Length: 126
Image (tube, rainbow, N blue to C red; front, side, top):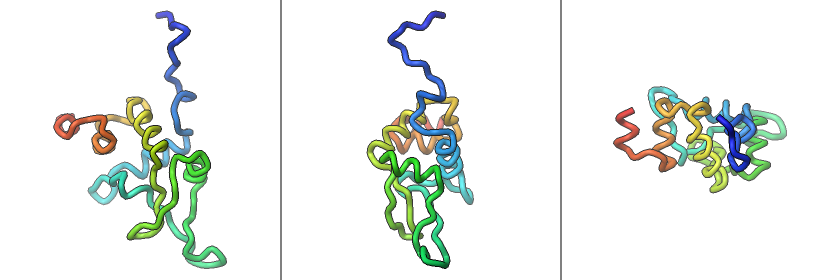
C-alpha cells in the first residue's frame, strides 16, 4: 500500500505524549483497589513529608514535562495535590485514546467514555 503525501504516519512520533508520559497515564488511569479512577479527580501526586519542601507536591519527570507543555496543571484536591488535565491535555488524551496500540480500548473503556469517545452502552458491551 502506498501512502499519499497528505497522510500522517501513525507512529510513536505522532502521539501527543512521550513514552514515559504514556506509561504514567496508563498506570494511573488503570484500575486501583477495584475501581477505575476518574479524569475529574486528576493524577494523584505524593507530597514531601519533611525538609524545606514539606507539604509541596512531588512532581515526577513525566508530569513535569506535561506541565511545561501546558497539558496539566497542579491543583489541590481533597486527598492531596493533583495534576489535572487542561483543555489541551484532554484533547491530547482523546488523540491518545483513539490509538488502539497506545491505549487498549477494553482496558480503558472507562476513560474513553469519560472523554466522550464511546457511549455508555458501547463501553459496557466491550
